Image (cartoon, rainbow, N blue to C red; front, side, top):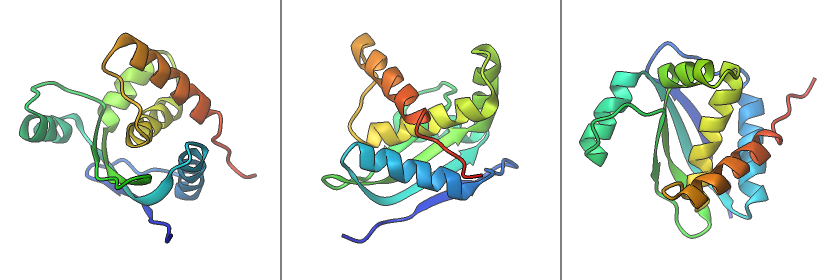
Length: 143
C-alpha cells in the first residue's frame, strides 16, 4: 500500500517550524494505532477562518481550536485538520503550557479522531486526553 503525504498549509501568518520532525511524529503515531497513512492536510488559520468553517459545515456558532474532516477509508487515514493558532495560543496561556506543546496536543487530537477516538462523553474525553499525552511523548527532534 502506497503511503500518502502529510501536508502543512497556512491561511494566516503562522509557519510550522521543523516540518520533518512533525511529519515523522505523525507517521509514528498512526503506525502506533495500527493504521495506514493516507493524505492528511493540516491547515493553520485564525479564529474567524475556523468560525466560518464551523458555521458553514457544522452549524455551530462557536470558536474552537480544531475541526477535522475525516475522509478515511478502512484503516487508511485521510482528511483535513483545521487548527486556529489564535485559539491554541490562548489555550496555552490558559492551561499554562508552552505554545508548541499545546499545538502538538491539538494536532494529534485530530489524528486520534481519524484513528477512531471520540470525545463526546466524559469517559471518551478521558481516554482522548490520555492518548494525547501518550502520543506527545513520542515526539522527538533529532539533534
